[in-house]
Length: 335
Image 1: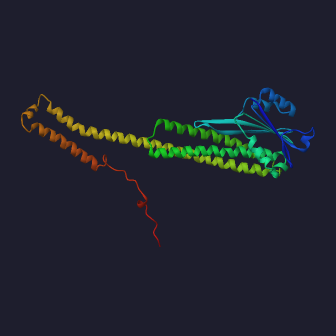
Image 2 (image 1 turned 120 degrees about the vertical axis):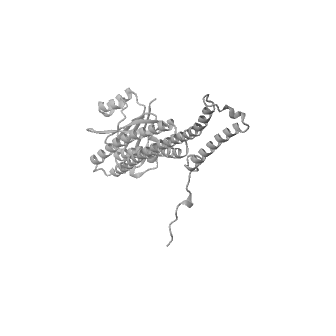
Image 3 (image 1 turned 90 degrees about the vertical axis):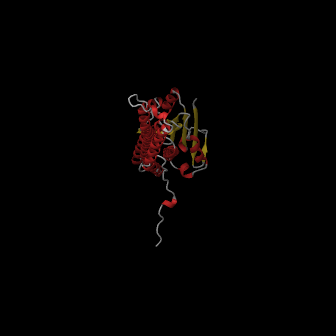
């Protein structure tokens, strides 16, 4: 369902209604439309003489950051990226037209940027109210990028949780699959961040004479830092994956070691019982001897005990893992 909101503002403040035909000459206008229909797009294109190719991109819901410098306005696409669920990224395009004294933003109802910037204007931020329309444009970009920090915080907490689980919990295939999914998400996010940085870099060079360019430079620095964070997260994910695989290998080694211990202990016992039951060598008469069965059982017990002692000395069984504490760490010597 379409939602249209608009703001007229100047140095005196903001209002939501047009007072006269000459309003745009003395005021700046921001129109924000959620879920525009095809008819809405055509109506806006006709009223503001917008490029048909850009309207087509909006209709197709293009989700790649880009910018176009046209004759009387700028058209750009910036993405709103966040987690819809813990396993699903929600990526929505924000389509921005910037004219001489007007700005139009179009997006889905999943995105809310109007209220935040409106609050800033209502607080009578004089720098924003008295500056040209590009200041609002740069502020919008900066606000969108600031939301990326929340996205990366969620990823960081997820990776930290994985690191802790890799140390204290048994690894599972589901965990590794989820870790691979997070790695793929960081690749997608990094690619979109690169495109966004290119858009901001292009604007910075094209609008270098603009007095409000500092808003854009801040956004450029922020997106650069976010890209570095994403790169560090990818390295951390790879390290965590290696740790999981190492833990799986250790568990497999422990399992094989236990099976080997049982096999080695049972092998001589099986040999004795096999010989005991052979027809060629009749040892069943040992049962006629009062201590015969006792001797066989004691022999089997001694073999088992000796093998257990052997494995104990080899530290294959009954060994305690050394966990260091603060006392194990040498304190720095005092001069």
